[in-house]
Each structure stands twice: as structure tokens, then as C-alpha cells.
Image 1: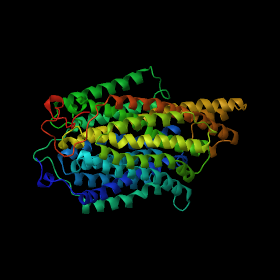
Image 2: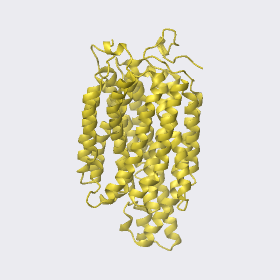
Image 3: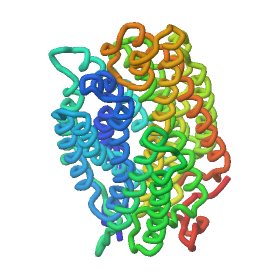
Length: 529
């Protein structure tokens, strides 16, 4: 059922009112990630963290975000989206305040997980609300605003984070505390302005078992990736137990979802070709997006010796590319009514940009890194939002929350797993390169062990020659990270190329003559071309 407000389309001014609070919410959630990413080398040094703990400070947030996204998305199809979004912002504020008060790395990781659960709500519900009030044909135009907001937040975040940790009178804790008043502003605007029609009423059920299983499966996978090859071998009883339990949990999850009345991830969505291929492409985009933001900032600060503020400025070309592509491509998609040509070109550009960054070394000119980053950013801006749009266009409006959350879930999962994998590869490469550099200097014994195996993020604690060798090792190893992301980006090219090109619907409802999806359900594709 729908409420009377859903019967008529919103005017442009009404849509802008809805967007006002949503954009603030998106800005806050994205700044919360990027503000910390650039400040992490300083934060982890202050807390005496290791390289493994460095990645977990990021991964804990992404894990909570990933696991909670499908839950929030499904709740969005069942309950009041506005109330859910306000609850999510509240969770984010609690997590941010607690993270700023953390006394140890373990506490920071735990509180960042709470923060991530709130970010999951803000991301999933923003997409769901947009999909509930704007027809797909017009949605590209307004997604240009959301893409630009993400890009601006990603540019502002590193600059603000760098400025905060560079100021003795502020300190790193304000990287988290500064998000609280901004989130409060978003909550106030949304409570005042946001009006969202409800498309489903009556009795509802929540698939709590499915939610628990998907959370456990993702957590188990990430714990294995984090410890394998460091605490135990790939071929060991520990690996067999953890990988086996992950496969078992995934199997149980699929079984539960096939029988649930309102599954967290409706399996019917995964029988639609475009949805499955969009998920594959989104995973690749997520790995590139999160990997670049985490490890490029670390390269600038640790290998090249720049301050957090300067490192933030060096990330601007990439994010400027994201912003420009999001604004202009979103408008072109709405004007043409087709999404595939733009997404395919964007996927190719993304692969080219990250492939070029595989050539990075300690001495690569900064202007060349900026060019490579801008190219990769353009590719991200062309693909990220339009992959969600392609899926939203293929499902009924009452399922748009679950569909949007499913794509966001797998993109975040790709980023989460990607950061752990890239972090493990990077840490091992840095260790080998540092040991080789130290051996060339004739440094052996405890000093070599400190540089080659400790993986400390506080280079000031190391002897001068050892610190220089570690810096060089970081510079030598960064190219391997982007080689992996470049290869993975080729997966997104193949996935998008295989997607069925569809025209964007100009109404919220399915047309009677639209192609039927799986199980006879309307696919809402709006016709193929």
C-alpha cells in the first residue's frame, strides 16, 4: 500500500527540500571517514599502533557499515525512513563522541565500529529515500548533487583532518568530536524538512537471523584475512576452520533468506542480471575507492615525509575528478535517459588511472601522481552513483531500499575486504623492502628487525638510518597496492560491459508492459536498448 502523498510526484522545490537534510547527512558521514583517513598515521603513532592495527581502525568502521547496510536497507522498506535515518545519525554521534575519548587502539577500533553502524544507516537510507521520491529518469540529475557532496566531503575531510592533527591546541581527538555538531545539524534539518511517503503498511517482519548470519560471515572472513600469513599459514588448521566456517555461514544465510518472509537481502534481486553484474562492478569500485584514500595518504606522509595537511592537499586532484564527473555525468545521464555508456567509459577510465598508479615509487613526481589520481577520480565519479541508479531502475519502488542497500553492501564489503588484503600485501612488501634496504646499509640484528618486522607507524622511535630505510620501503611498496586495484578495476569493466542497457523510467511505478523479472515479478527495466 502507499500513502496519499506517494500518488503525486514531488516538485523540484519539494525535492530540493528533501535533499537539503540528506546532503548534510551524506557530507557528515563521508567527512567522518576521510577526516580520519589522512590523520591516521598521526593517531596510530600517538597510540603506538602497528601496521595491522592501522588497517583495523579503518576496517572496523567498514565492517560495521557493511554488515549493517542491508539491515538498514530492509528496515527502510518496512518502516518510516525518516525515523530510521534520525536513529542512524544518533548512533553515529554516540560512536564519534566515544571514539574521540578512546585511550587505546583497541578502544578506538571498537568505537569506530559503532560509528560505522551509524554511517551504514546514513548511506543506505539516503539512497533509499532518493529512490522513493524521485523517478529514475530524473534521479541522475539529483544524484549529481549527491556525488558532488561526496566528492567535496572527500576533499574537505583530509584537509580538516590534517589541520586538526597539525594543531597542538586541538589534537587528533577532535577528528571525531568535530563530527558531532555537524551530525546534530543534519538531524535538525531532517526532522524539520524531510517528508517521505510510505509505500508499505501493515504487519511486518524482520529477518534478524539473516542479519546475524551475514554479520558473522563477513566478520569471520575479515578476521581470517587479518591474521593469515602472520599468525598462521594459509595451509593450516586455523585457516581451514575459519574459511570453512565462513562458507558454512554463507550457506546458512542463503538457506534462511530463501525461506524468510522479508529477507534482509531478497534473493530475487540476485537473479536479475543487471543487479548481479552491478554488484561485481561495485565491489571493484569499492576496493579502489577505499584503498586509494587509505594508502595514498599513508604514502604521502610516511614515505614522502609530508605533513597531514599537505597530504590532504595532494588528494585534491583525485577528489576534484570525482566531483566533476559526478556533477556533469549525472546530468547527462538524466538528459539522455541511458546510464550504461557513461558507466562503461567510467570503468575503463578507473582501470587506466589505477593501473598508471602502479608505477608509483619513492621518487615519482608529484604532478604525475596528481594526473593519475585525477584520472582515477573521474572514473570513480562516473561509476559509483550510476551503478546504484541502474539497479534502482530495475526494481519496484517498494523494494528500492533493499536493492540500493544490496549494492552499497557489496561495495562496502569490497572496500572492507580490499583494505585488509591490500594492507596485508602492503605490510609484507614493506617488511621485505625494509630488510633489503637495511641489509644493503650493513645494518643487521635488532635494528634490522625493528625496521623490517615491527611495522611501527612512529618512525621517530627508530634510529635515523632505520627510519630512512623504512620510508624508502613504503615508497617502493605503494605501487603494488595500486597494481592490485588496477587489476580488480578490470573486473568492473567486464561486468559493466555484460550489463543489459536499459532506459531510465520516468515514473515511480512499473509499467504493465515492462519485462518480467525473476519469478514473474516486473523487472522495471523500462525497456532494453
